[in-house]
Every structure is written in C-alpha cells, then in structure tokens.
Length: 148
Image 1 (cartoon, rainbow, N blue to C red):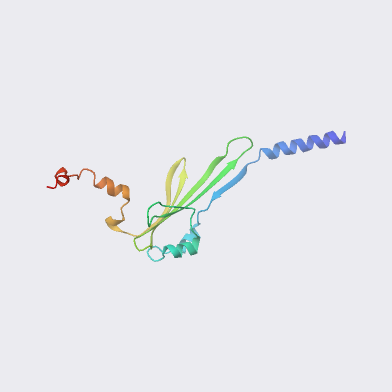
Image 2 (image 1 turned 180 degrees about the vertical axis):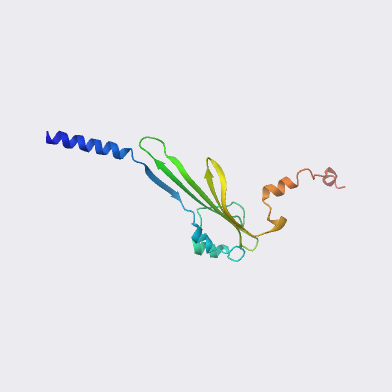
C-alpha cells in the first residue's frame, strides 16, 4: 500500500510539473542603461563593441548597422513554444563610423513597434537605400542612354 501511494504521488507531481511554463531566452539585446552609455554622434563602432559587445547580426552592406536581437519564449507542456517578447536594438553608423542612430523595436500584437529612438539629423544623405531607389523612380531619361 505504501508503495502504491508513493507511486501515485510521484506520478501526480510529475504530471503537474509538466504543465508548468518553461521560459526560454534566445539572443541578447542591451538594456536602456547600457545604451545610455553610448553617445550618438560621438562614439565609434569600436566604442560600441567595448560598451555593449558585438552583435550576432549586422547589416550586409559596408558600414551597415548592428542589430542585437533577443526573443523570449514560453513552452507549456506538449504545446508548441510561444514567443512572448522580441526586441531588436539597431545601432547605425555614419560614414566616419560614428553612431548615427540607436533604435529599439519590439512586437505588439504581431506588429513591429518602435519602442525608443535616439537619432542625429543627417539630412538627405541619411536616407535609406530603399528611399533613395524609390526617389529616383520616374526620373529616367531614355535620351541619356542613347548618348544624347
């Protein structure tokens, strides 16, 4: 009898513990206190690497931004894991490798939301590549291709 009661208690305990949520954390995004140490327009790429470390992801173009990505997931029992929080910190640099912009993005109901921004005014030269490409749309002159 003692063994069957012990086995029953053990089974119930295991069953209940299998239902408890298990958090999982992936990636790294610096917090606001760490980002406060970075001075926009003053710090260089090397300064950022020293203060908050190098990211796991960076842009593919030369001089591109650094992206720090962190995702928090919860797994409950047999269900598929659910992402409960995602943050992306984007630090972009100007032509002289100084910090031009620090932005933090998150998810709210599946939509990307800007949580905070620290930007220097770069004027038209700070346009994104997509904006530059689209701004030239419609300014094509066929005569230039024919040498005239």
